[in-house]
Image (cartoon, rainbow, N blue to C red; front, side, top):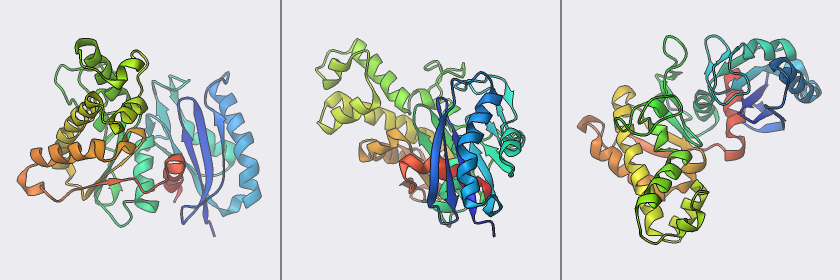
Amino acid sequence: MQELALGIDIGGTNTAFGIVNRRGAIIAKGSVPTTGHASVQHYIAALKSAVLPLAEKEGLDHFAGAGIGAPNGNFFTGEIVFAPNMPWREIIPMAKLVSDALGMKATLTNDANAAAVGEMMYGAAKGMKDFIVVTLGTGLGSGFVANGDVVYGHDGFAGELGHVIAIRDGRKCGCGRLGCLETYASATGIVRSADEWLAVRNEDSLLRKHTGKITAKAIHDAALQGDALALELFAYTGKILGQTLADAIAITSPEAIIFFGGLANAGDLLFTHVQHHMEENLLNIYKGKVQLLQSALPDADAAILGASALAW
C-alpha cells in the first residue's frame, strides 16, 4: 500500500522537503540550499543525497510519489519556466530530474497551486470544491479551485491574482507591468506604502526609527501599539486587497478565500478592512456568501504539505 508521499518546496534560497502520510503528518523532513550549486544537476545531486536515505528508511515501495511546489512551476509540462527568483533562469524539466534521481513519479506545480491542493486535502478547504488560496508573502500568490479541480488554464499558468492590475498606471512590478496587486497587498507592498508615505508626510510614527529598513513585521508591531500610520497602512492595504477579491469572486464564485503567509498573520488588523471592502464591492448575488479563512496548515510546514498532496 502506497501510504506515503514526498513533498518538496523549492524556494529561491532554500528547498524544504518532508515525508508525509495520508493524514498530513510529517514523518521526517529536511532541507538543502537552492542556491550555491554550479548547475541544476549539482542541485539535484544534493537533493538526492539528502532525501534518498530518509525515503529508503521508510521503504521506497510505500511512496505514491513526490509532489513539487516551485515558482513558475507548470503542472502540464513539469517544468520551472523562467522563474525570476530562481538560480536557473532557463526552462528546467524539474519533475523529470527529480523522478529520475529518486526513482519515483514526480508531479510539479507552482507553489500557490500546491498550497491550494494542500488546503483541500489536509486543511481549511477539506470538503470544499470551490475556493481560492491567497499567499501573502514577499509577493502575492494564488491558487483557484473550481468544481474540485485546480484551475490551470490551457498552458498551466492560470490563477495569477497577484498580477491582476489593482491600480491602473500604479507601481512598477517585478513582472514589468504597472499596478499589480502584489505591489500593494503583500509584505513587500505594505513596506512600499510605508516608505512612500513617510517620505511625504510629517506625522509622528514609530516607523520613523526604521526609515529605510522598514519591514512588514515592524509595521505589524507598530500597529499593535496603536500607531496611527501603521493602522492606516493596514486599512489601505486591506481596501485594495478587498476590492480586487470582489472582482475575483465574480469569476469563480468561491465558497471561501483562504489566506496564509507572513502578512496574513496580521489577522483582524488587515482582514476587517479586506472583508468590508470586499463586501462593499461585490455584486449583490455574491454578498454574504464568501468566507475569509486563515489556513489550517501550520506555517512552517504548509509548503511541504501542499507539495506532498500533489502526489496523491
